[in-house]
Image 1: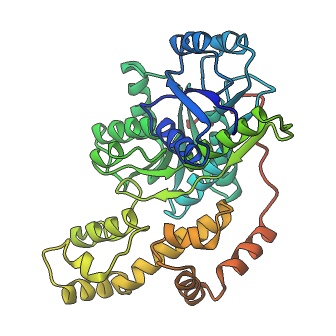
Image 2: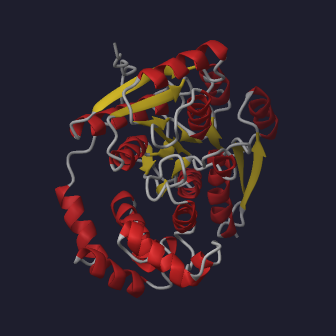
Length: 398
């Protein structure tokens, strides 16, 4: 019988990131019944609770540098799921923030904006890494990138006024990536209050896919969906190996994001037609679910035949072709950004079996998914460095 292991989880249950990590750890727990978990808040009170409980190891999301010495004084193995700011030599499983910044840039570049911008909060090293990867990808495409000086964790009226001035001053159309959804909602609301049209004048992309908050704001906030479940599972696996006596040779593991969940803040198709806008939104938001043209028609006040005619007239393709186009775009991203097997990718893209995905992918691209993945990996440019030593300077507009 395996020895019972006690594992402390200093994780926030209030954020989408923390909840996703907890779901991943819960998946791990199903196969490891000898592990006992306790969740506490990632703050001083949580650390004191761990001091009393004395777990065998901990999985931690802690941004307050001043609390790190107290945490380390417990002398327990720790795996971080968000690297603390300016703290070196720690074992960490976290989101690949270079890939996050790159994916955000690639999504916004598809819009063909005149200017691209990044807005961040003073929340941690991840903001700098995402901003730099975003800037380099935009610059590599030959486009102009401007970076708004980081806002505070809870921006006040003065900072919001400065953000409003910046948004109005930037040449339009402007496409903005925010460091996370909280920041993205602030940018979106500030742009709206300034009288700017979303997404025609200002497109906004967030990170974390906080649902339903991303859907409650108008228009809905497009967002990068992080693989937080995978982060939780990998962190639990790594800590379990450490507690079992294994030597950890890789101090940091970076997990690629899953995809961009497209909503109204970056959508550019059929904005003048409310029926098609609603249908295309439904396709994007249900990309992983079985979806038929009849299902789409039920969302509208018009018949299936009328819907198909409107698609052909305005988009020069059928609703079914649009479903497949969006699914294959999702599959392309997952093939490049993750090591997910084909069966799992098929499920994420709404296909009942890998064979269905292979057939559709070949029709759309002329390649099988496996061939596409190997060919694109071969062509991929040298990876951007993950570590940065200094905050990127803002490019000022005069």
